Image (cartoon, rainbow, N blue to C red):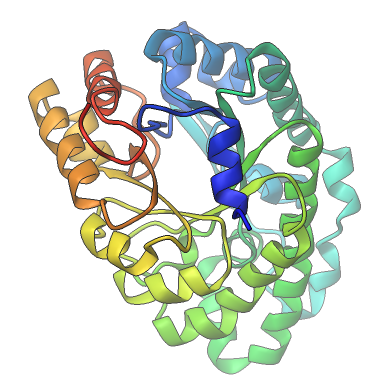
Length: 343
């Protein structure tokens, strides 16, 4: 029986190694569109992403990577920044007894959520989805809890009030699932669950196993039979939890540049799609095209033990990354076939 991943790749008719740098707000620069306007207007976001797709000719487009989208919809106050995505300025609550403030109905009322959904719909209608991935990001349950309560509160809650904190996670889980389903409904064939606050850079592997993994697994359980690839991305050095991330059951893992791609490939093998992991800052932003070439070749050739691989950035491509660097990344991938072998 063919796996969901193999069927997906066969349906896309890939012959070259696919390459999808995580281009978000960088696309607004390519399209000369104001970032803040694109964050509230789905047609502008889609226009920017489609312009970048046409310019670079890679294999997929995604929405902007904005971790405040769900938090704002739930009632958090956000702070806008001229050249990047917003941040949470004021949390929704710090008292665990107020978890009922996390109301799923608020997702339906959010103007910005509707605009992100519109961006996916426009992109899916505009491009040939048999060849190009259309994707979106959703905030993972643990990170969303951190956004609505504040990181200090959840750190304290894990230790002093674990049962009450699990009630919070059940509520944020509902939001993650709802957002995932909405993006699938608009035509996304790939959804990336972002859970950066569950990184070993912030919490221990034991706490990951107790407070992040069970809820990430439930997201997968809800979408298992849906026609979508579900990918998990956790920032930072996830080497110590890579096996646990794999056990969450996602179709793919997107790996930060801090992780040895060779090690990740040996762990993953044919069990999931591996996505990564050119350094977005040191290489794509601050490096030369030759630096990008070397890093991209290293990623590809060190990932051979992973059956399914997409060359990508380790996290979002910085806005001011030189165009020539992204072009070089795509150029390198085109020299390899689907099985990571040079033509």
